[in-house]
Image (cartoon, rainbow, N blue to C red; front, side, top):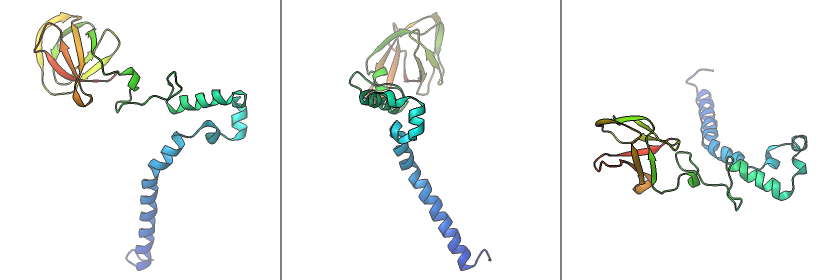
Length: 168
């Protein structure tokens, strides 16, 4: 069959249509499987082999919710919502954070990561730099701003502020 024949053109069109359909359906297939229960994911033999038939209906419901929430449920048994950055909303309350930058600090340069003494890490999310005297463990306040953004302010320096994004 020639590459420019009507049959070859038809065959290429059918292949392209099948590929496009598979590509467009992929998010829906993933959504269906990621929200499915253990009973739907496992065969009856697997379900029994893992000892899941021993669970009460309430325990099985809780386990399914835990899996769908990637490991966390609240006291009411609901899986928490996640932010765009992947943090569980409950872990990233929109309240002010008061902490210290761990170790020596002299400013930021446009791509600085701020490691805090509470274990959190924040990355500079706007261009710009600040150079100041080297200090050890300076106190900082991180405040919520509009549209989900955050502002890091060095305590005792009113003009020392930069937008940040939590990374850990």
